[in-house]
Structures are given as C-alpha cells and as structure tokens.
Length: 575
Figure 1 (cartoon, rainbow, N blue to C red):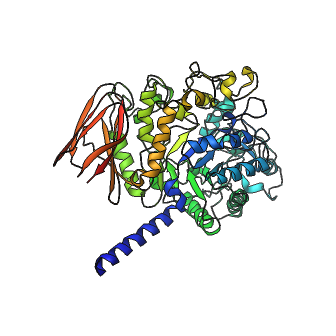
Figure 2: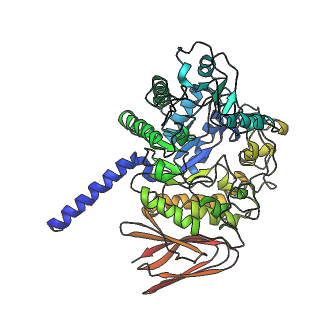
Figure 3: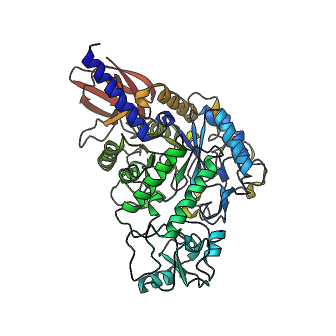
C-alpha cells in the first residue's frame, strides 16, 4: 500500500471510530433487543402475573433467540392505573415483580449470558400516590418537593370546559383529554397532568414562561433544576446496580411551551453528556418517534413506530384493524396479502430520517410494542406472512426490537377488557405462550386469575410446538438473527438503500452494504407474484435465506427479480 492510500485508510478508520463513539458504546453496533412486558412474561409465584424471577428463569431461551439486550417495561412501584407508567417510587421494584435484589439477580444472570438489561424510565410524570406529589400538594410551598410539580389557582376557560367534558366521559380517570386536573388541594386548585389524571407532570420548566402565569417557571429555576438532578439520581442508582440503559417514556414532553423542542433537546444533551462521562457503556433510548429531533438531542436510539414520523402505519396497520383507524394518509397497508399498499410514505420519511441520523445514532423499527397491535392480526395471520414481516424487521438498519411473543406469532387478541389502563392495548399485552398445557405454561394460577387470557390456536402458537420445527416462525427468526450477527452488512452499521423506483411497489427491494460486503433483501407480502427490474448491483446474487420462492437473475446492466406470492429472500452479492 502506498503512502497516500495508507493515509486515506487511516483517516477512514479514524472517522469510523469517531462515528461509533458518537453513536454510543461499541456494543450497540451488534445489539438486538427483546422487549418484555413483565406482567405477561413468566409467573413463578402462581398469582397470574409475571415477575422478575420468571424472566430470569427464561434467560437461556431469550439467549437462544439471538438477542443480546432486553428492554423491560416499568418495574418500579406503581399505582397500576397505567400499566406501571404511574410510578410511586422510582427507587424500588414493585412487589408484584419481586425485590430490588431480584432485579440485581436478573441483571447479573443476563450479563453472564452476554445480555444487556435496559429499564423503562417514566421521566415526565409520577403517580399522584408518589410521596413527592403528596408533599407538593401541601400548603407550604417551600418544602423539598414543592416545586417538583406545576400548580395554579386559575386556568383558561377553554381548559375548564375540557375538564367538564372529561368528567362527562364514561371513564374520566382513563381519559387523556385536557391539560389540567381540578384537585382543590391545600397548595392550589389545579395541577398540570402529563397523560391520565393520576399522572401529574414533573416540573422541568417552561421554554417560554408567560409573565402573567407565575406558576410557569423557567427551565433554570430551582424547581426544574432539582427535578433534573432527581432524574440523574434515579439513573445513577440503577446504573450502579448494573443496569445498562433506559428507554425514556414520552421523552419529548418534559419541558412545556417548547414547540420547536429546543429546550428539551438541550436537557437531553445535558443528560447524555453526564451519562457518557460517568456511565459511558450505558445507553439512552427515546420514545420520541422523530429520530431527526431525538438523536441530535442526545439519544442513542429512537423508535420509528405508530406515531410521530409517518410511514410505519402505512406499512403494517390494515385500515380494518384498531390502529388502522388512526391514520388517514393511506388506503391499504403494504404488508397485506391484497398487495395494494404503497411504499411512498415509508420511503420518503424513513429514508430522510435514516440519512440524517445514520452517523449520529440508530433508528429502531420494532416488530410491535406494548402500545400497539402485533403483526399477527386480521388477515395477516399465517406463519408464511409473519416470516415475510420478520424478514423486514430483522434486515433493516439500526437496532431491531422484537416484542416478546412475536417470534412465535402470538396474536393481537381483539376485544379484551381494559385492565390497569390498557384500554385498546390489552390485546398486545397477553401472557407469553410457552407450552400447549394449562395457561400456556405461563402460570400455575386458575385461568380466571391470569393477567390476560391466552390464545395458542390449539397449541400451535407456543414455544413448545415451534421449538423443534425447522419450518416454524421461531426457527426462521433464529436463522434471521444468526445471519444478522454474522453478516456485518446486514447488522446495525450496514448502509441501507431502497432500490424500488417511484411507482414500483411490489416486491420491496433494498440493499445493505458495508465495505465490500453487499446483500440484497427482497420482500413480497402480497399474495400475487411480483417482479422488479433494478440496476445491476454488480455481482452474482446468491440466496442465503428465504421463505417462499424468489428468483434473482443478475445481468450486466439490469437485474431481474421475481418473487412468488408471500415470499422473502436475502441474497449475498458475490463479485
């Protein structure tokens, strides 16, 4: 190698290392997350609710999936009006899950298996049962926690009408309507909420305080600064016990009257600098759903999901399903056997966000989560269809998140009752299905005591049924994760480019590249065969994993791809 080439190579290596350091700790470059809703994963004490020892008992199974990081939904002591997102004590594991020591045991056992553990941080609010809020509501405004919340004696008439309207609803306590709650506390008449009435907003200050509203404190006021210190203390407390990071709930909501998110971005950059200085191997994951804001704001990972940046819904939410009613920007979802969807919204929005953030952090495209429906819903309900969807989830750039049970095709159960604030989300929070027997092996409790019911389709949608079946969704998922880890171009750092041109809808074709390594991924969720001509990718395409039949003919100028109905394939390009 001549001197100029050597200098160029060293410069490229330096830039690559700097980019990785900016994006976060090195382990993120190969991270593959598994999200667990703790109440529904494994019950070891027979009360019908999952617990931390239950998760610990399943770590070998979790490792067998090829995942190496966990995100647990809230486990702190809670009032359980919103699935754990109404926190009473941020420093204590809720007794339904076990003890702080049970969490430390889980973390230590996970680490022995090379698995990181991240928790859910509800940074924007607490429960009204939290001791901070109780003290804040007292008459004396100069106590330790007095300014942790936002109190006032008057609100606009329009907001008073919102309170009246909320109280006329069937379940006002489960309504997100309006901004304020009438408390008639010794401190003041109203407080500001963040979601439900039982979730008072923590006071991080106002980006643009109204001088006519004395309760609107600036972000540098003592109260908001004390809240920031408290959040750092919470993170440090759990980091010191081995926790590897936090997914931050409603991350963009902390500072009020901040329309351009300038002040909340400053806040999270401040948190990121503190974290990187004292806990450099940990990560911050945001529920912001706008990667172009969240990642420059300091988060290592942001989600591409059902709200925020548009495109996920048009891929996965059939208009006849519960979440298909949210968006009006499309007629047919893409991952549907009708094959009438469009890539336009996804292509435009995701591509722009990806290119803007790929050197700063990671976008996560999860298979589902606790807040919206699973892939197995409506007419997308066969193993072959779910394999096609999983191919997409596990070959996209950034960091994959598999929602527990999606690896075996668990169904979104329709029309389940509201429980602990789940509302329409109940169907995605049902117990993990392990075996064909009683309660699908989740719990020894009486079936009517289960957190939610199970539906295994006569045992088919269980780990037991799929474990030894090489044609099962579970086996296919394991093959996908193994391939992702072994092929660096398919992993988190590989570049991504959609190869479909405008108006070319099916099949979806994209390439993943890293250095000299290149793969082409073909995905056809439609029931009809589809063909696509693309510019030559510069080599012979060899199939390394597929479901259904996909034929790839390489040419000097044009490559021809023919995909049978409901099929997907991953091709390695050999030059």
